[in-house]
Image (cartoon, rainbow, N blue to C red; front, side, top):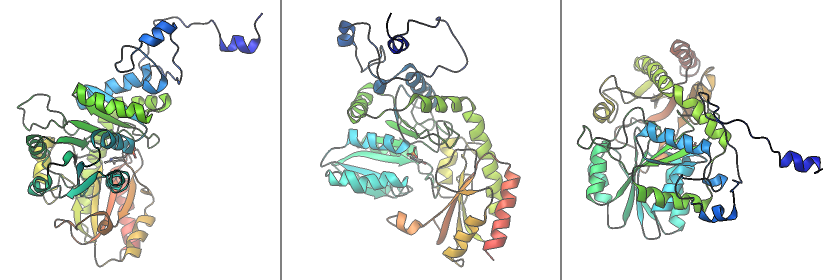
Length: 402
Ligand SMILES: *Cc1c(COP(=O)(O)O)cnc(C)c1O
């Protein structure tokens, strides 16, 4: 008789096959068991014909990867422990000493910090370009340029660049494009050119997505993805992914998968409430500017219209205001602190509305000509009733900005 502990470990029970339910199972593994040494030697980690090690994939992560390809119109997908790790994987894989990366000046902040930190210390240079000035981007592409980051809309100031024109320019100059597609989320526009010649054609090379935001939808998971439509490019990214030991836990993958079926409905609900609040914000004298791609006055509105399908197109759940210069920082902070439903916190895409005041001056190489002077406050609109949120904003304004 074998010892009980050994029996518990080497249990003979196998559940019957053929179980089926709406959601896939959660397969958790570091070790993957091979049927034999010969099979172990034969197994290939590069494709999905088999399993080799937890870090290289399980049925759960393969399933999520497939669903994200479907969401974004891609063919290959890598999962990473955060959106920022996904950004870093792209940079580490596609850049080496002597190369240069171009990043929009309004990019997600930590993308710039990575360029200023690790990339610079490894001899990889960067330049920031004006996201609304194609000529500025064009003038910065040199023989050293290997990668151009794109982002639409800018996640603090919500300007919408001319993505198709930028991709076209980069491809004409032989430079790879990587889009931070967190805002569009695969719903506002198609990042890949699925029907060549369609209007507008986009066709980025790499789409990075912070699944932390809309796909998760819960404010409780960190994850990122890197989606491509080119096997050679995917393999290059995957090699880095493998060597760096990036991987995600099955429970987190399952949490994101649970969010996907409701994602489009949530995205639409965030969008609708945001537009109601944007319309109200436009009537308030405390705000010298309201930033949201659907507004004709918002920078890049025409490009948003063209890419996202006109007035009824998606505009996600973020908007920002510029609080007039006559108010002090102390007053602006008091406004944010006086909000009851909006919580002070980074990120977006969850059910709870969030607010962050930004010091744009320290974030940008140049103060954008299209943004009024003042303090930018960004709101992430959750799934609460828009009416309740408006009442909350109004009471905080009355309290703090008099
Ligand atoms: C949040 C975010 C990221 C990073 O995602 P994390 O999972 O928080 O690391 C990247 N890009 C954009 C635009 C984001 O909003």
